[in-house]
Amino acid sequence: MDPAVLRGDMVDSLQHDSKGVVQSEWLSAAMRSVPREAFVGEQEAYSDRPFERLGTRVLSPSTAARLLEALDPDPDDDVLVVGAGVGYTAAVLAEHVGPERVQAIDITRRLVYDARQNLAKAGYEAVLVDRRDGADGLPEYAPYDRVLLEAAAIEPPRALVSQLADDGRLVMPLGGREQTLATVTADREVQRLGSVAFQPMLVEGEQADTVERNRTQREDREHARRQAQSRTGWEQDWIDWD
Image (tube, rainbow, N blue to C red; front, side, top):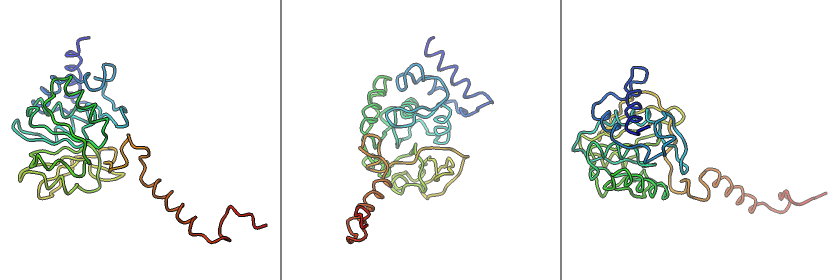
């Protein structure tokens, strides 16, 4: 079937009262225009479900729509996407504000390469995608009218808030085990928009293309090694004292 028809059906379902996650004309038009199959493959492109790719979760269309509706950018806004992933949300934003006004970052190098290729394939090669720690943002291009963080954090990252324009807005999943979709102003005023469930924002060393992602396990193992080395002879469990 024609992908344009599938895109139309997808957006129609997201606008239907049963979901109601696409409400703005700009978002409806942008999602109907961006070829999602360039980012996730033809089989997964227009089903409303998340899945894994290169160690990251690709958001379902309905979840992406919730984020973008909360972001609510104007056509001439400068936008930063933190957690570029496969590049789809950056493309939808680029369709609305223009590719040259969108920057995206990701901590995982192979996702950065993937997002660049996908955006170029879809016709948005002017979107800048860089490999950065998300908590640091992209200060070279600040201030931003809108910042979208596609990973959960306990508190709004200070660097991202500091890179907002005076009337800017950060949209992010806020919390740990229990999360809410939140908007944050440059004055750190928070508005909560309902529950969500996102993966936590990674720090350096935890990304999918490192040898080991879990920082806590590494630390526990190192503490155990140091403790074993500090024991005196009679404390060593490898000695058979009998």
